[in-house]
Length: 182
Image (cartoon, rainbow, N blue to C red; front, side, top):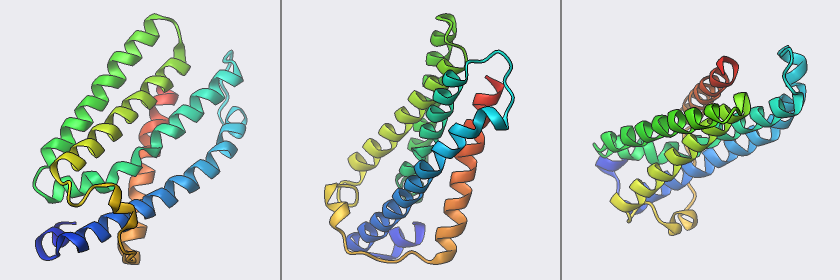
């Protein structure tokens, strides 16, 4: 992204961001296809004594849905490359605050693991909305609805494989940790 911002025109930048969004959408689609298998087998994979398997499956579904926040990764990368990474950090801070406050609220109401998973999902949703809204507000020439009609370009395979696997693995491991600890 840094190289694209420094050397490419706005249309080329828009094409690069659109290609990144399309790639992340495919990744999220794959995650959503695999998630039901994990949710169904969760009670078998992880023994939870005394926990209602239905509530556990709903919680696992919410944690998996929160991992879909990788969809905002191109916006985060663009903000960081445009020397406004602090705004991406504000989105991360708001996510953490939302998780903590919602998590505390649902814990006080007695919702347990399901409530904590709901808090994680809501925090991730806050982060996605803030990142995309910030990117659209600061860079309207690159981030707009016309982004999806931008000319298609192919991302290099090294960028696609390493970046996507790292982002997806990080989101899933952080999300799963919250559920297991909760």
